[in-house]
Image (cartoon, rainbow, N blue to C red):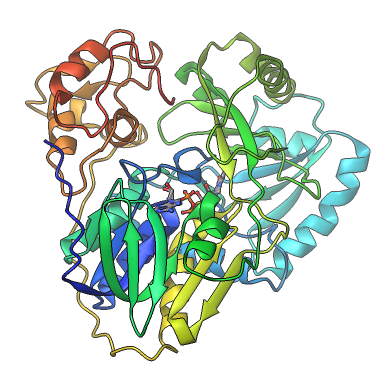
Length: 469
Ligand SMILES: Cc1cc2nc3c(=O)[nH]c(=O)nc-3n(C[C@H](O)[C@H](O)[C@H](O)COP(=O)(O)OP(=O)(O)OC[C@H]3O[C@@H](n4cnc5c(N)ncnc54)[C@H](O)[C@@H]3O)c2cc1C
């Protein structure tokens, strides 16, 4: 049976964090390492139930972030910390580098300014190239390429295991993770009483990391809204692993005012993404895909890397960015009520999460709260899912293979189900193991997975469930 904690209303936590996206998980880790008693409150049945379940998985350098912005500082801090801790947590880094590609003279005319901005942002490993030079570093690019900037330090990571590692480390330090607990109302009277759908939680301070519901949660905490979430959808096509050989680098377009644009990008799992789009919508939950848009993405991908035209599609999906009326992160602190809002973490949150967590802790230091005594990071190493490194099936005695497309062993599935932060639903199991994420999208292994997970997920897997990608 899934281990869930009943709301510990008798306990008083130093910090309650609302929302277990990548930001909330990183904040939970940072406060736990600082010595705080931490509770992470999540309305979904698993972590990454919102924006963080679907992104491009790029660990950004910040070369194109707004100069002088807090976002830039936090991307750089988050990236630096990821590079520092990743080996200890057994997290991958695919050292792809990126090419910002200009496909006509007008775009090429913008590259000099983009490179200058990157250097002003402190990113020095940038090189302007002709189209021919760029193609020597990635021969699969179309001959139509006019010019490019190489950004050496843009990399790809595993977007799901990283936040899981952050929370696992927090839990190893005693943090509590409450799932299926929606924050309904918060009242501050010297300390916070947070009413959730499964009971009350008491805490001295609160951090709102509710992503797509950041403004709603601020209101529920009794604050006049200072920002408004305007969800921005991004649709993706996932191409088969055969495409990976043609896309060794992240291929970025020259960005527009609204979006970083459509990217062709290898993943840590050995396939290739084409996307995302940038579409405003009101719905904060449903992210649908549309055939016409997906076909346009495929066409764009093939114009950039012609060999992609022949590649089969493995999956399609869409994610929602917690964008707001402003381009800037919407970060507010209310020292009187010991409350911090980390809102509007739009399109760089995976990269900046650890930086945002450092920032939240530094804001918390100004609060009238008992001093925290930092603790040593406990040793935590997550299972590797990256194709660029050894997987479990390549090690001795791996036993039964359950998912043959992604070569997922029964041992990996059992370990995920028995872990300190086990999956709460089938999507969570897929993100922890890759089972059902390959070519057949679970057609062959779902029945076996349903059998193995029976009674062990908050939301049971129905055979034929094609959730996620
Ligand atoms: C298409 C796309 C591509 C992207 N590409 C990249 C990239 O390549 N690199 C990068 O760095 N970033 C990227 N991003 C951005 C990144 O994914 C986001 O910035 C990040 O996921 C935001 O995380 P979050 O924790 O703030 O929000 P969320 O992930 O939305 O987490 C908030 C959590 O709060 C929970 N919650 C909400 N309301 C309540 C409540 N009342 N009570 C309890 N819990 C609640 C939700 O269920 C959710 O789990 C991309 C995003 C998208 C959509």
